[in-house]
Image 1 (cartoon, rainbow, N blue to C red):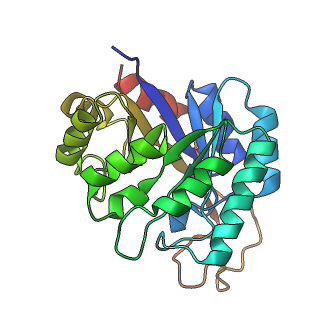
Image 2 (cartoon, rainbow, N blue to C red):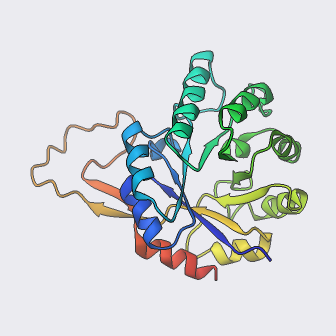
Length: 248
């Protein structure tokens, strides 16, 4: 049986290094975590590529939060980002696109796949808001993606166990199901046992207090988002190790 593979959703190079130290096989480097993950900066990708030596680097390609219906300008940006990430030596990219009717946007996905030539491709959780997941899986297989990141179209992968099990059986080794969203050391073994899935995506983050001494709390930086400027959420080696150990 295929061994388990563990991917950490890393919100910074610091989180990437914690994942590597704890033995994660892969990281998905993202900015904009409160928005569900957006494309990180050039500098972040470059630093991660230089410092990750044993853990594979995958980069999300998502120009903004919100839906997965992209304008012509956003598509141009995404294609350029894929080209840049490939040139910088990333091992893989993570993207997805839907039509306004909730179907897989096959023409644009084909463009993205061509731009990603030579890299591993994960279709991200746009899958979890598509109209027909079983049909979508077949289309994503035909596109040539290596895996689908999914919570089973539920708020968490644990809640999505019934669909995850169905999709794993349907995939039948043709594509990898990567279970993610809410996966942690308390539930990863149950998800693995109930679904048969062998790859898992989790953040293993902990909140750390800001080292700032002077604090002007009445001036928020997050607009309508509820953020805490004097706290940072980072992946920790301790939690990555604990989550991996819970699945062994």
